[in-house]
Length: 208
Length: 291
Image (cartoon, rainbow over all chains, first blue to last red; front, side, top):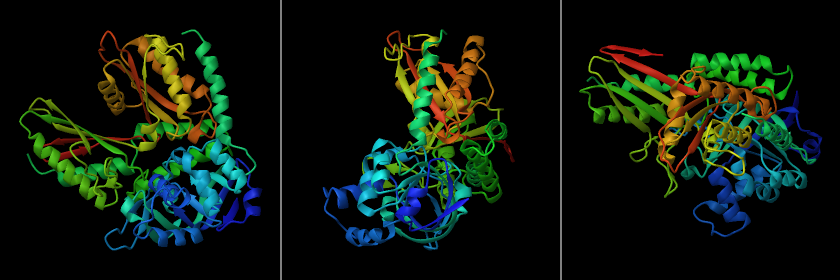
């Protein structure tokens, strides 16, 4: 199976095609609803003033996300009292909620890969072509299995968002994903959606 | 009534980290239907591997440990106030032990409570009295947000879908919900469908029916036939595991009816993900039986 070392180069990303299983190695950052809204408002659209440690975290994120990967994940983490953090369960969350933000976040931080489940829409697909980047599908619900490929928790930002919504910096080894949206404009999700819509219309036309 | 907090913690552990046998059996059968080497097959194989790891390590099957939905059938004379407190205490302990993710977020102040307690409604606890000689039975379902988000409610008639106020109309809107859900509710899913009621009771009923076993059919033969047909036709949509495209989109469909107002005809669809976590514990004196 193909492996990708993070941070990834444009060339490595452009080689990936829809349907390809890939193993990821290196450092990635989790981020979901609260994180995307916060990044968009504070650093991209700048409709909100930075506060607390926002600017400091921004500098760190710029380094981590340049050529890096965002993982839509709200993990179960042990060691919260001792700060000896460990990912116990860490499958993907539904990605489509980040559709309003994702393409802008990718372009702003030069994010090469977005991991989640359920796929994303036309705006993100365009973002994948422009950045370039890919959407990587992890298996939804496979939380204990995926947590085994998280070898180390390197740190956490914005823990005040809550454990699921914080930005966790993790090191992964052989993290399993499938490319379902590539940098050439192909989306497996658009294909399945369209095909299922056609069958749905045929079924509607059938007598009861 | 004795203190059952530790027993309920154990109950939560089992529910979060192990699937019911009837669900696992259907998932195993679903693997064989997908083409070897396909993404759908790979997804199902990963799902099963994950189930085994979770069971062996007592770790959550899914990191989204969901909305905890408790149905408590208590013998006459028991204190529901005390039972509620035991469940809430157990939830805090289960969260500390990482059986549960802190999942209760104050919607107004956007703050996670950190311990899975939130107001009066989180966890959700429903009490039902049974005769004094009956055992105490607690049922628990953990329903994640991904599948909850793709649930849908329709008010019939629905012109766009040509769905009238009858079972033929119900069929159309349920298929619409499945098509729209794609893989986002972690297919293959299980459908709980309630027809009638008001908006609130209808949605609650569509979840309550998911406490039943897979393959249990509605006693009315026509409704039972529609259950089977909806599972079959959902699979014809070809959405497949995770929405990758494949043979199994829905594992089972359950339909129930409620009385409605003459003016209303609601159809509520609750979509349950493949990580269909539901369990039962029965307490008879000193004896505690987990299903």
